[in-house]
Length: 134
Image (cartoon, rainbow, N blue to C red; front, side, top):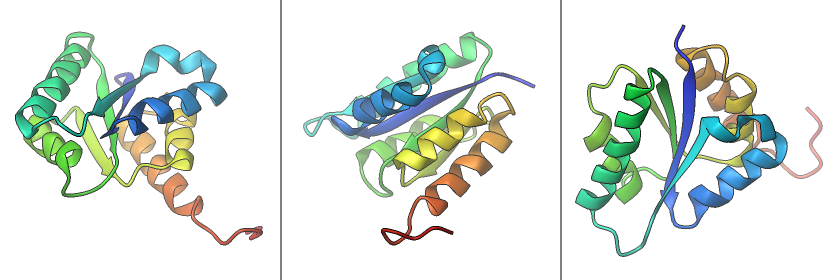
């Protein structure tokens, strides 16, 4: 099973902020989490190229990539579609939130598919009314 790196792609400064939150809980995963902040002025080509460079570095290192992106239809997400189409070593989930990031990192040693499944579970279970206990 290949190792997996987590890549957070979002409108600036959200990706970097989520990376900091991830490292707050998973300090030992600092080398396994990257952030790509897409500035407001960035065009789709620029974002696609930056993402492509990061994914190529992961390929060169022999690792798969779980990409967590902020919102469907916006530049970060569209860059993922362009840069990662047909890439069996990358999986993209939209709607990134803190529970999703933490859950992904908790299962980062179990392979890309399992890590993605657990990240999705974390995303959904993290959305609940304040005070809910189940």
